[in-house]
Image 1 (cartoon, helix red, strand yellow):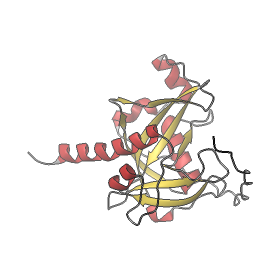
Image 2 (cartoon, one colour):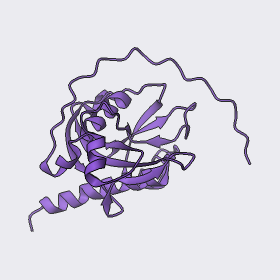
Image 3 (tube, rainbow, N blue to C red):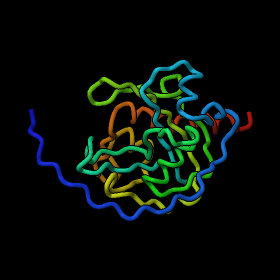
Image 4 (cartoon, helix red, strand yellow):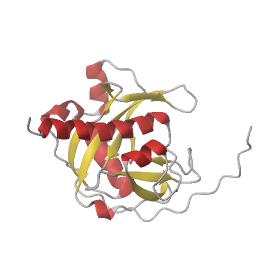
Amino acid sequence: MAQEGPKTSPPPSPPPSPPPPLNPVFPLSLQEYAVTAQSYLVSKDKHFDGLATAALVFDPQNRTLLLRRAPHDSMPNRWEPPGGAVDGTDETILHACARELWEEARLVARRIVRVVPEGGGFGAVYTNRTGRRVFCRFTFEVDVEDREAVRTDPSEHTDSVWATEEEVLAERMADGRALPITAPVTKKALLEGFQARRDAKGSEDPA
C-alpha cells in the first residue's frame, strides 16, 4: 500500500470578491429545484444528509469546463466541474449552483438550461469518504455571461481546462496531458451532459 506523502499547506486565498446578483433564469421544467434543500427533501420524502450541485458550462466548440483540485485537498490534482454543497443559506438549489459556480470559477450564471439525467433519473447518490453520510448531487447545464472570465481560487483549484467529450472519455487531453476525473460518478455525469445536449439539439431539428 502506497504511503501518503506530507500534505502541503493550502496557499492563502485572495480577498473574496463581492458576489454579483445570482439570479439566473430557468425554464419551468426546473421549478422543482427553485426551493431550499430542506423543502426539496421534505417534498420528496428523502432522507439524504445533504444536497449538492455541479455546473456544466460549455463553450461554442462544445467543450466543458473542468477545474483541477488543489494538491492539498482530497482527490488531489483530479478534475471536476464547478460545484459543491447546497448550504442552508441558499435561497434555492438553483441559487446554490450559481453560487458555487461563482465561488469556484468566478463565472456568473445567466441561465440554468437543464438538469442532466444520470442513469435514467435526476441526481446522483453518493457517500462521504467514511460511507456514513449519504448525499444527492444534481448536475445542471448552465449558460454564463462571460466564459472567458474563468478564475480559480488556489485554495480549492489550481487550473482549468475546456475539455471535449472525447477528452473526458479518455481522461486525457489531445496534447497528451492526463485528465483524471475525480470519480466514476462525476465522469458519468459529464458524459450524460454531452448526451443531453445532443438529445436537445435533435429534438429541435426539423423532421
